[in-house]
Image 1 (cartoon, rainbow, N blue to C red):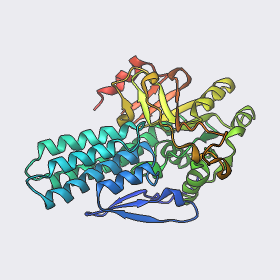
Image 2 (image 1 turned 180 degrees about the horizontal axis):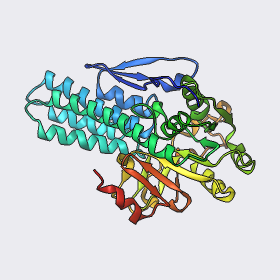
Image 3 (image 1 turned 120 degrees about the vertical axis):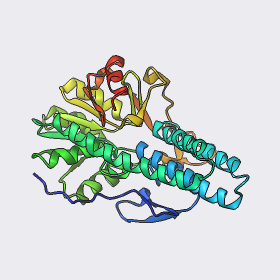
Image 4 (image 1 turned 90 degrees about the vertical axis):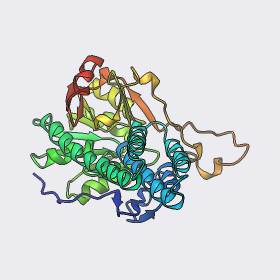
Length: 347
């Protein structure tokens, strides 16, 4: 059993009148927080991946709306709504796949409509609630997921689904944190190309909590599974369809296929705000493609180059490859649309 720190690293810190954002592009070499006082800069932080991870993106967007209302309501108390609407539209364009973003913006829009006389206080309070609720959900998911790992000797995770990607504690890493506090567990993390979230973020974050972790090249995952070292692959999610199909960091689909081949179980951990009940299957999930320059060496980033790059950020894992979806409302084993509906109305 590993003794853990009481506080995990915080990617987002609300300071009453501004949002402190940990620039995750600088990790693990530098721990740098930047202050954001308007929605436009918050949107830029999301686009440039200073903020990343579906729950954290939603929380940041909620604070972005609060900052927008604070700014425009004070500047023009009789004509602020149009400016706020423009900021909300800008935030909505920042990342297309993470459904938490659109959920949070819809929640904040509803708060605005319900509190036209005192929108600033109402929006700040609700953004803080979204943040706090996410942290509580992470703790609950951590315990529920750890219950499934009682006999596990080793787990692997992909990308970063920890405190850095959420309001705190984490989804996939929340399960790992909770499990490690109960039992001995070998933890492995894939490097997660091309942004190396596993290398730069996950292993660093676990080390901050004194949790031993072994890093491996993405291409070594199949051989690790064949060795018998792991029983589970545990990942987060950016969008889950009503039938359980799950969009997550690119590479998750291939891990799911290889896991199935080797009898390794796949666990997806995400709050119910990540479930998009409006889409029946993963075929309807929009997959974000980022600039080819993120993959290409400098010598190929020139006009007229014959070398291009295909750079999808996510892929979709079919529900039939997933053993368990863990949410704060409960666990869905071998997910189907019927099974998913069982947690939809849980209070």
